[in-house]
Length: 618
Ligand SMILES: *[C@@H]1O[C@H](CO)[C@@H](O)[C@H](O)[C@H]1NC(C)=O
Ligand SMILES: *[C@@H]1O[C@H](CO)[C@@H](O)[C@H](O)[C@H]1NC(C)=O
Ligand SMILES: *[C@@H]1O[C@H](CO)[C@@H](O)[C@H](O)[C@H]1NC(C)=O
Ligand SMILES: *[C@@H]1O[C@H](CO)[C@@H](O)[C@H](O)[C@H]1NC(C)=O
Ligand SMILES: *[C@@H]1O[C@H](CO)[C@@H](O)[C@H](O)[C@H]1NC(C)=O
Ligand SMILES: *[C@@H]1O[C@H](CO)[C@@H](O)[C@H](O)[C@H]1NC(C)=O
Ligand SMILES: *[C@H]1O[C@@H](CO)[C@H](O)[C@@H](O)[C@@H]1NC(C)=O
Image (tube, rainbow, N blue to C red; front, side, top):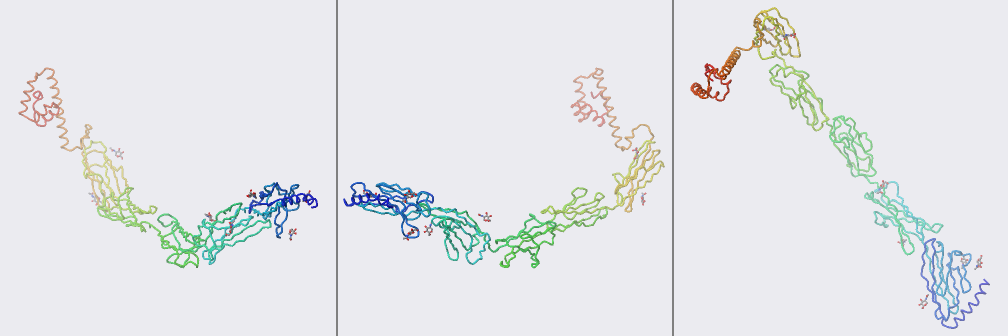
């Protein structure tokens, strides 16, 4: 210090001289405050000039800081014309740089610390030129870490009377103290007694930072289940206020059940016996309460369920009815319940009347009925041998014939539920006397002697008829076939024709008998014109006439041929003559002839009895 004082002496003297020589005065200004980020460098400016100074003065410039704790101040820098130095052993030793001239000084603080937030003094002592001092406050800023929000993990009930803690938010290590604001769906929450409490805990860390923790206590309502909560930290930075928002959280809100719904989950559509049915119950409460399932007719019998679903496996019609579910909670009023009606549809086996098999007399009527009990509308159709024979549950069989016999199948279906179907059958047997197959009751045959004829007799009837033969006129016969096929009896006898004989086929059963007579005329074996033998008399005559006509036509054509060769003269005039002559005789014949239909006209003429020779015609 001694060295310093010795150096100062001439300066002081000089300044004193200045002061004496005029109205000298120092004018000094500083900004009120200087702001800097932690770790950055800060510049503090001190502007001054010397008014009325005749020449640039000699002066002393010193920087001081306010000591933290007591109100005193401490020099950190000294400068005059001869020397500039930073004081040793202060908080700023090694961190500051000072520049100065006649207009001002600049204090540059590097690596600004939180402890640098204090008052800085700039003191100018111009001796005779006067002295002045200015001060400024250095403010240091450190943005906090991003806010961390934490929701309460457990659900919170709306029935709580006081606001409950729903989340907390912390912003750590900021400087100066940051603020925390809460938002619900982007709208800020303010403290509101009985509804919103904001509890703030500020911690000053040993490092000097502030950590702020805010707890939000909130009285939830059901609608808050969809609300999003966020917290926001706001903090000062040089010249501004900045904010940082947390991510958003939602709250598990517990609220009582006020409504319950019960429905059939599966199967879709109608339910039939044998199905597995799942009923599901759901309420509007949170958390979903366990449910109890009951049936309306037995409200006290709890059905075994699986939380919110009731499984009824392989249901039958007795499972039909009203099912109910309600929350298993005494807090929920009894009328809060869900209901569903379960209808189990069924189709019982078809019952056919008459049963199994039924006999009906030939010619009589029979009505069969097919009924299957069902919970739904049914449709019945009847089949016989794969053919559709009737609609509806009754089948009317009128005037039964042997064709009526057979198995009748009724198929019952449920149009609204194709999975349901059943069928039944009845065997109808038509009972009656024998009925011979074929139209004729009497058969006349002419057979060449020596030929073996087969006489066939087929009869239908129930009971099965038996066939007996009675053959008169020959012993030379034997039965070659005697076959029964259901209601059909077939018998064939082979007879060797030696002379005329008659055969009687008698088909009989206990209901009656029917006979078929054969009479065979033996003809001596000449030609094999046996084909014509069965033809009746009138038929033979026609054939004979046709043959005669053909013969006549043949003769006519020969004559015509001869005439053409010139044996018989015939001119155009001649032809006309003949025609004229003919006209008078027979109109039809003329007409036909002008058409030159030779053969036909010949035939007609013959039929009409014109026996004129072919020569005349031409
Ligand atoms: C103020 O504190 C500093 C150091 O902490 C000390 O050197 C100084 O003497 C104190 N001043 C007063 C007036 O107590
Ligand atoms: C500060 O210390 C340095 C060396 O340690 C020395 O040269 C200087 O003179 C000291 N300054 C003051 C003001 O004591
Ligand atoms: C914090 O809140 C206080 C009181 O509302 C307000 O004066 C201050 O400016 C706020 N600080 C920030 C950084 O927003
Ligand atoms: C609300 O919270 C639940 C469970 O924590 C989560 O699954 C859901 O995605 C959240 N919803 C929103 C909008 O954050
Ligand atoms: C008659 O029937 C027998 C046995 O079916 C057969 O062998 C024979 O050829 C038949 N005779 C005639 C002429 O049809
Ligand atoms: C046919 O047979 C039945 C029963 O055997 C008999 O009663 C009936 O008289 C017979 N009829 C003829 C025409 O032979
Ligand atoms: C010193 O000079 C006068 C006149 O020139 C100005 O009006 C002042 O503002 C100035 N003061 C400083 C501190 O520069």
